[in-house]
Image (tube, rainbow, N blue to C red; front, side, top):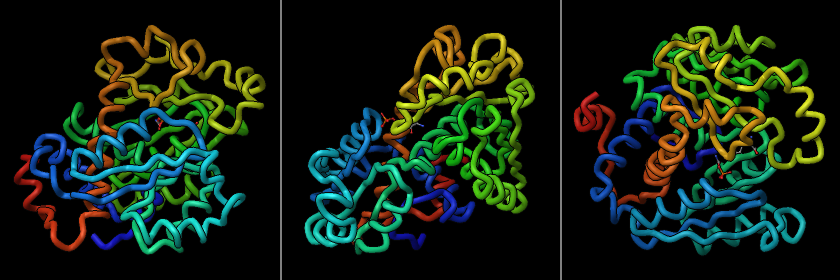
Amino acid sequence: MNHKDFISIRDFSPSEIQYLLILARQVKSHPTTYCDALKRKTLAMIFEKPSLRTRVSFDVGIQQMGGFSIYLSPAEINLGKRESVYDVAKNLERMVQGIMVRTFAHEIVEEMARNASIPVINGLTDFCHPCQAMADYLTMWEIKGNLEGLKVAFVGDGDNVAHALMFAGAQVGAHVWVASPRGYEPVEAAVKWSVERGRETGGTCHITNDPAEAVASADVVYTDVWASMGQEAEAEKRDKDFRGYQVNAALFHKAKRDAIFMHCLPAHRGKEVTDEVIDSPQSVVFQQAENRLHAQKAIMLELMKGEFVKLPGLVELQELVHV
Ligand code: CP
Ligand code: NVA
């Protein structure tokens, strides 16, 4: 694989996404094999928004491979205000071996990647959350045994998580349905890209305003908060606009009997999802959260390993992981 950065699922080929997923499975089942793979390497983590899972999983992930992370809070860096993105990139490339960025505008992560000579990983932007999608499809694969042909229904805001779910779904040949209220649908360019990539892989992407249509016979039912980080001022209006888009037992039961419930977390219980659904045996939200760790270890390994660490190729990995 010849990529410096991990910015969007769209930047990769279907076989590269498959490779990263299978590497994640291998890393998960044989963590000690990789315990020195990033020895003494440092990841700078720039957060302009809060985080639990992203921060902990990147920190623990790099430590498990022999490296370190440095947490840089919004107040410390103040990207683009205290210092330009360019200058931050040029400083960090002299001291660390990788940068993870969680920020608002997607263009900031792209600018960081363009200007830094070291790998840059997108830890969530307003546009997409690619690390989340890798953990999501890893989870679906573990539970369902395959990804091709799965019906994945996302109910709620056509947000960063929905976009990444669509992109990765198109890469793995899944059928992704997004049901959002009018005015909250995924952006058109994201839908267009997903439909086109799906033509190569057998995947499809459908947008509707009807949650029941999206969830009907789905293998996976997914939701996310109605107001994302940065949209707090709109929360009250959104609560009204998203009425009817709650994943409750009545909606969930329209899916297949063995459907799973997914949520990137944090969840606003009683809003986008009821306790009954998120706490049900069909909810896999904590396996999904754990898989952030394994999926991101695979991404860091691939991008930050350096010339002395040799990773197995796709065929070799398929044999190791028995798929
Ligand atoms: N799902 C996710 O990215 O969680 P955090 O915002 O806690 O990192
Ligand atoms: N859409 C949410 C995802 C959080 C992981 C947000 O951006 O706040």
